[in-house]
Amino acid sequence: MIAEWDLTQTNQRRLKENMPRVAVIPTSAIEPHNLHLPIGQDFLHTSIVTRRSVKKAWQTTRKIIALPGIPYGVDCNLLDFPIAIHVSQQILDAMLREIIQSLRHYDIQKMVLINGHGGNDFTPFIRQIQYDLDVYVFQVDWWKVAEDHYEELFSKPDDHAGEMETSVALALYPELVEMSHAGVATTRPFKIEALQKGWARTSRRFSKLNEYCATADPSAADPEKGTKYLDITIERIAAFLVDLVRAPLDAYFPQRDFF
Image 1: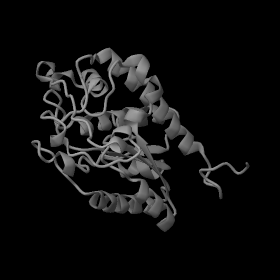
Image 2: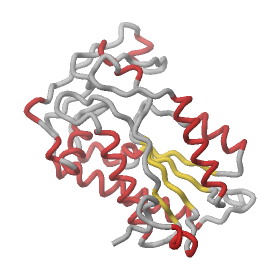
Image 3: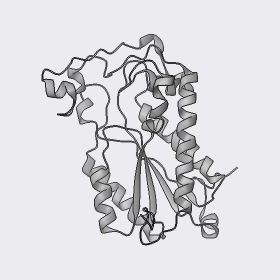
């Protein structure tokens, strides 16, 4: 059965009959995640979250399309571990600009970036392209969507390759997870108090944190936790996509036309 919501599966006959109004683009990374998770962790979970969210939204509105994802991300701070693939933010922005310009050619003005990698920051790009072109671009960091449920599901904080990410992997592709090799990643703290408290920030070179390329403890990971977190996330993203399709492109979009 053809998934009409997937640009790689549909065809121009179907598109001519039903042109989408919202395009969804997954962005992710190829990088090490501790010793137990696949290098493609971010690419895999972001692709699945995107596809499931768009498919769910399609059941309500057939004016949405999922594009193939961009697999690579900003990973210069992980290059000491094998094998991270680094693409600069400028290159990612340039590629997205070309993709968005192509979509705008077909009168698609609303685009959503479903991002699965914390190293990618499209905020300046979105600000600029919405000034340059008659488009509206939104970024959703999918792992943050259900943050208000995090403490009821997970017992340990997660930053990279910890309990939440491992639970998601166990729920989506357990055959790729080797829990017996997981390292409990204790990270070296910052020397400087301002960095410790978080009101001063910097980029972390992961090889200075520990030898695992991880920043969290995955030992409490469980596929049921991952499934619950994903269900909430996908439900919310799908609802957002439906709302985005239905919202009229008036003079104040995406704001309301009243105070």
